Image (cartoon, rainbow, N blue to C red; front, side, top):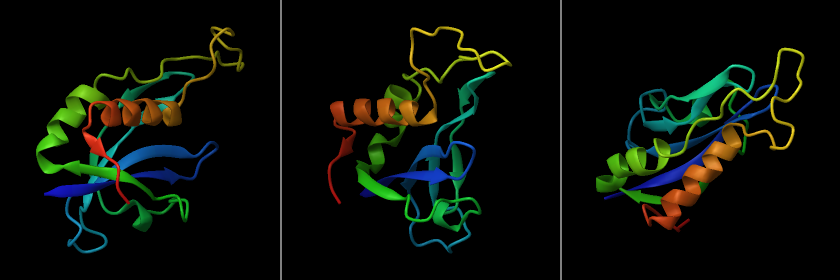
Length: 134
């Protein structure tokens, strides 16, 4: 059995980007239909990895219409491997700015939730945990 893998966005000062794996597509729209893999926090205080069960992101207030995009599939038996070898392997963004907005290390580009998602996706595809497929 395989599950579809998506990226999705919620509106914010900067849109929040996450990976959504739909593990229960037959559930009612507002019921738990999958799992969201993301980091939460700010580049002021740092972020933490915080996966959670969720309804379809398209039903959540703040979802950016049209932002749920299928990126591939994952086998059911690879879910734990994905969490351990991809999500837990990529460090969440650390604190990168001061209260006044000055960068702590101006030589490095800012690294936010979207960068974390891209790094996790790359590892998942490199390890063949995610498979291409629309």
